[in-house]
Amino acid sequence: MTTATTPDLVRIGAKLYADDPDVIDLAAYVPIFHGWIQRRILDGVPIDVADYAHVPDGPGVMLIGHEADRSFDLGEGRPGVLYQRKRDGEGTLEQRFAASITAADGIADELEADAGAGGVSFARDEILLKVTDRRRAPNDDATLEELRPAIEAALAVVRPGRTATIARVPEDPEGPLTIRVVLS
Image 1: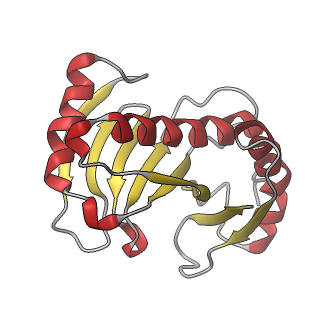
Image 2: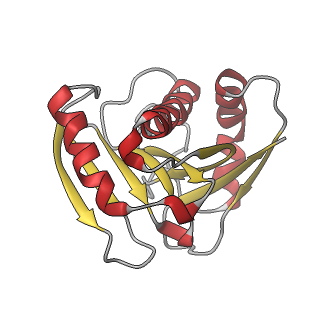
């Protein structure tokens, strides 16, 4: 098995959950995401916006980019913002986890500040991490334990002074490594 801490592990995502899903109007996010592309407020190369709101528990509305995708995600039946890095990650593994969480925070901040988003807000005390490189990071407890120090170090930077409960979400053993972080 390739170790999960390999420098090539860059496909790391972070999701923050919406506080009040009742205020969400997915149709509003399509023009908001297009506006982000037009105003060039994103790092990397944005490609397009795709509306998958019709897919139950699916990707919702996605802003697809070369290096990373951003979305208003409907997965798990829990709406939220998802940042998913795809390539060109920089820094140590800890820095890449921290960068994905920080990017999700940035998406949440932008939407919370946008009047067109209908007053949506996002909790910062629960984070869903996804490592979508199944070859380098198989969805098992051993990989989580191997990644735990990097996740804890990242959390010390992006959520300093907080205590974290870190657990694998084992629902789909064939799916990507999915980790729930709950902060207190």
